[in-house]
Length: 275
Image (cartoon, rainbow, N blue to C red):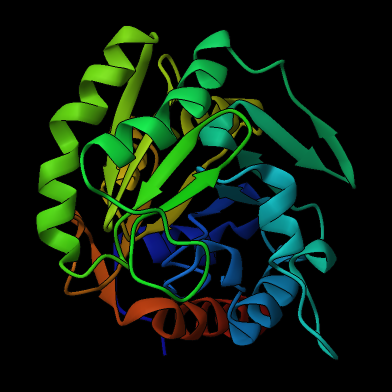
């Protein structure tokens, strides 16, 4: 059963005017120690397949490469993200776009290559071993147009994150990049695009009349703000965790992680089918 929220009521009243936007990691896929092991919650994928044929658009807005989000959205013996009718994936905070199996993206900025080359030596000089598997250490995730340093595998993840913030901010400044803080991760990425910009542009493109956005991390705050500033009936959903609480303070609705997001999407699809 759906909560009694004005934004959800607007989506139910006019589903074809609705855009359903979602983050990937921590929202559609559980957070895991190795980012390469992340996979979509099968119930979330199934719910989105139902929902995609009922609303105006489903869009995933993620810091991951768009093609990676699609690949990690595969579900063995079940509906996958690529099966969602009309799905659009805006990757790299909106710099990339996947739609109908086609990927469009600009060339990576030169600062990414400089960061990629400098990071291993910088981390070594700071006493942070790079984990190549299950062993303790920090993990470098190369996203093509961004590079992320995860501390989840470090012996003290929170302390490692604090110790790395200043050196990585300095490296970002030297290479014309910026640092995005997330759940035990520091991502060095190009300036000029965030999830808020990406979502606002997509709402305008689709001439949306209502919007839902679900996220779990600090990078999703910009998308929450985009919903608020859009002037549309909207609802912001926090996929709750103990690691990040800032979104819960600004969300219209709080659910318990990707399983809670999946349950909400399923309930919304069911309500629209009954409407």
